[in-house]
Structures are given as C-alpha cells and as structure tokens.
Image (tube, rainbow, N blue to C red):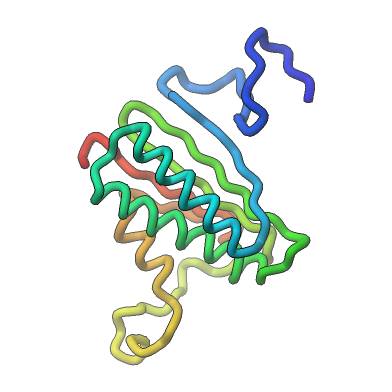
Length: 158
C-alpha cells in the first residue's frame, strides 16, 4: 500500500486525506461469510462502546443492530458463500458512531419488506432483523440495491 502522508495508518484503518476534522476514528474490516464474522463484530462493538464509555442501553442497541446487519449480510446477502466477504466500516465522531455493512450478494428490495408485527408474520422464525435495526439505530440507510446498510447512533442523546 502506497501512502503519501507522513503518518502511516494502522493496517485496518481507512486512509483518507479528505476526512472531516470531527472524525475521531475510521476503520474498515473484511470478514468471512461465516459465523466467526459475528464473533469479531461482537468484540468490536464491545471495544468501541467501552472506549467511548457508552451506557448499557446504547451498547445493547448497537450490538443487536450491527450483529443483525452482519448476520443478514452473511446469510441472506452472501448466502454463507465462503468465497464472498462482508465489508464492515465504522467511524466515530464526538457525537455519533456509524457502521456500514456491505455484502457481495445480489441485493434486495428493501422498500417492500413484510411487516414482522403483522399477525400473519408473528410465528415466522425470521424477518425481524431490519425491523430491529430501524428501531434500535437512530438512522438506517440502504444503498447499492440493498447490498449496503448504514447504521447511525447518536451518542450524546444516550
């Protein structure tokens, strides 16, 4: 990796010369499409929440939302294909923590998902991940035909 700046970033950090000044930390991870990826994310969320001294409610919301996003990327997006990766990025600012989760699958129509609270869907064993993400994160955005989800958490409000 060629780096023209005088500061050499950590191998997992995203190097960018046009970062806003308020970004404290920004990193990218590449995970296997396997359950081991979930364990890595759980540890990452624990470390971030501990470092930024977030309360247990914030930690729980971030942990569930981000692991649901990674789980969806592994099982639904990449269909547990070991040749496909899950790309996770995060950045922290003094006021927020944001995660992006991107899979290498075909994407999906995120605008027409069944409502998991509808009585006909209550007994179904799946279909609640995006519902949980939308209720636990302060903002959820999908892009790249559903292959990428961004989760934003305001840390000052918690």
